[in-house]
Structures are given as C-alpha cells and as structure tokens.
Image (cartoon, rainbow, N blue to C red; front, top):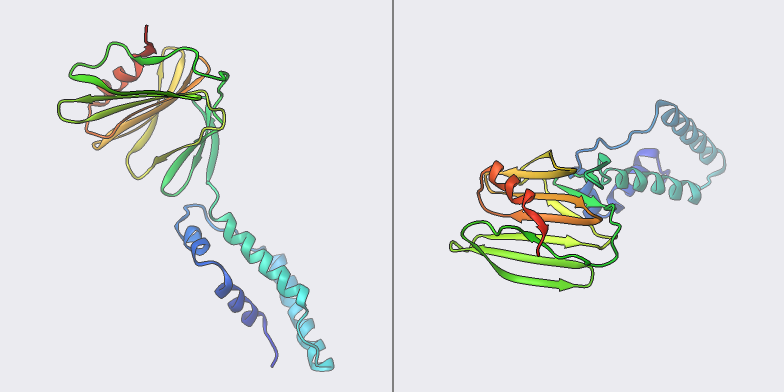
Length: 224
C-alpha cells in the first residue's frame, strides 16, 4: 500500500510525546511554520516518490521518514522556548506562558562575605529562621498572624529562580543604585535584584501595600 505525505505526517504526529505536545500547546509563542518554498519542494518530492513507486514498486525512503520526524520534533520543541529573553536588573529574564525564569545573575561574590537582613526588622515581625549554607543565606521573618517574609541572599552564580507569572504583574523600580524587578498582586509580592555582587530575593505571600513592600526591599542592608 502506498504511503502518502498525509499518512506520514499522521504517523509522526501520533509518535510525538504527549508531554511535549502539551508544552507546545500551552506556550504563548507562535509555533514555527514551514515556508511556502519548503512546502512546494515537499509536494514536488512526494509527487516524484509516488511516480517512482508506481514505476518500480519501491517503498518510501527510510531517510525521508527520519528527516520529517526530525523536522516535526524541532518545530514542537521550538514551541516550548521562552518568547522573550533579556537582561533586566542584573540577570536574564525568560518569559514563558505561565512563569518567568531568572537566570545567569551577575554575581561577583564567591561566598557570603557580609550577612544582609531587613534593617530595621518590620514592626510586628521577628526572625523565625536564619540559615547560611554554602553560597546562600536565608532569613524568614514571621508576624503574629503567621505571615512570613522570606529573604534570600545568594552568591551562587548558577542560580535559577522561577516566579509564577499567573500570580501577579511585573514592574521595575529603581531604588538607590539598583533596579528591582517586582511581581505584585493582591495575594502578595516578590522582588529580585543584584546588589554588591549578590543576588537577592524578597518574598511575601500575603496581601501587602505596594509602597510598604518597596520600603521593605529598600531596608535590606548589611545586618550589623
């Protein structure tokens, strides 16, 4: 039985991994399409193949099936890449359909040489956890309502941080000499920035006034 172009495409589509197909469907980036020239060459090639099969009774070329499979897989994979990748606030920002990823921070420190904290500690909060491990310092502040304010200070040059973009809207705020990238909503706030060779992240997963949160970010200093 002769195998047509549509038969091959249908077989290849069924063979694509379901998770990869789901990633492609959820991505905001428009999936790449083949050019009209490529489509015409493919049509001409299949027409030639059909002619040769009728004449010689030959089966479809194995290399052709592999080539088409590679092209379909490449197109599907491209759908999962970020639609924007740019340097903001001292790190690269990759924007996906449901989250934002911060990578390649411009960290110049190799270890935690100075310990930062919120100075002064916001009214109503106390330090409930303090930990320095390797290239990272983490401090958790808790209030009487069990709301937590989490500070991360990192000298990890390979750090990668994900922020749920469905959680709020993003903006940049200049505070002193540093640019802060903030994700804010009525559910809470998160800020990331580079300062004195470190990467910082401040997260408050509860409702807070935007200006109050910015004041908290500005209060992050060397805790002497």
